[in-house]
Structures are given as structure tokens and as C-alpha cells.
Amino acid sequence: MKGRLGAVRISRQVLVTIARLTTLSVPGVVRMFRSLPSGVDRLLKGRGVGDGVRVEVVDGAVLVDLHVVAARKTSICELGREIQAHVSRAITDMVGMPVLAVNVRVEDVESVPGG
Image 1 (tube, rainbow, N blue to C red):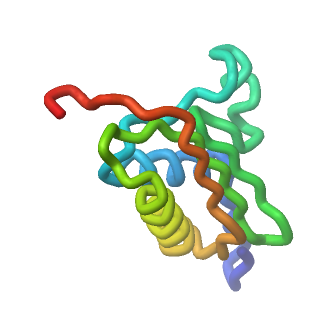
Image 2: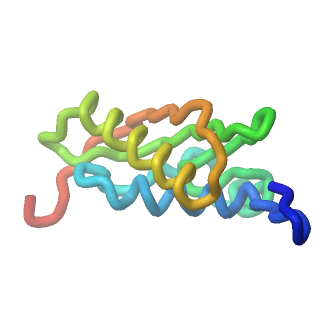
């Protein structure tokens, strides 16, 4: 993003963090699914990959892939739509970039403590 005073650049890791924190705030998400072995995600950290999240920027638009674990007794389809809406809105509101797609993959279902 360029302005009169210079450019503002957003790191892909910022986009990963926004997507992860927003996803975890959606009711019905137990946790992110670690899709890469422990050491590999640390090696790829600056490349738009993090705990259950992968982000690409294509022609100035954001593409997000999310891997989540859902709570038992949650409507998976409804959860996916909620995650897509929340993550898309958060990225657009916080960094002003359009979102091309938010792909949600539910990898597992778990009981939540006390639930």
C-alpha cells in the first residue's frame, strides 16, 4: 500500500496471525490442527505458514487455507461458513487487503472439557 508518505508493507506472518487468532475466536473451534511436523512449520514461519494456517498473496489479494479441529456437536458446515466470514472480515478490516478465498478444512472433531 503506497501513500503520500511512503509504503506500508504487511508481512505474511501478520496475515497468518490474524487468521489464526480470528479462527480460534469462533465458537465451535477447539484448536488449530498442526498440519506440518513440529520443526517444519518453524522453518517456514516467514513464508506464510503457521499452526494450521497457510496464507498466500496473489495479485494483492489474500488466499487463506485453515486446518481446524471442531467441537463435538458442532454443525461443521455452519462452522466453516462462520470461520470464512470472520477471517475474511478481520483481514479486510485490519490490513485493507481483499480476500480471494478462505478455505476451511475440518481435520478432526473433539470433545471440549466440560462439554
